[in-house]
Length: 139
Image (cartoon, rainbow, N blue to C red; front, side, top):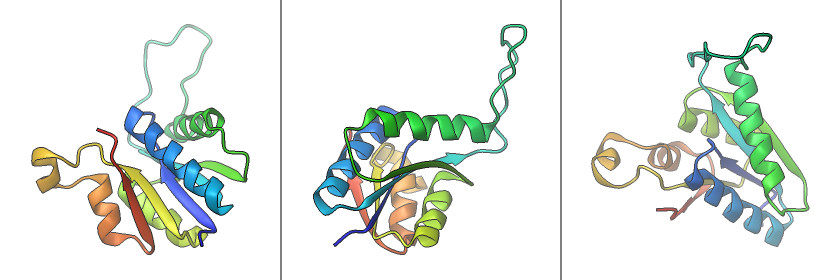
């Protein structure tokens, strides 16, 4: 069945729900769960930090989100949490190729209305994924 399940997270409730579904699928199949957050290298750092604190880089922020989601899940199997460079859909497809993913799990946030016509992460992943895609109904 599934050996590598990949889920994309961004700190949203939709992504959290997708991660919970991915963890359930990984638990049922004994798969390794890969939790990935895309890194926007162009994201600016906050300028209003207290004195003595330095801002996290975009990569550090992405890694923190992925690890926080991993820690919030009750999955007891193998979990890998990491950042991935690029736009969300591109990053997920690239990581899926790198880890030979059997399944990519994404939430359906922004799949309705005009966004559906202009594109969304779920739609882009579904069109370009090298494996099965599970789109979790989260809204």
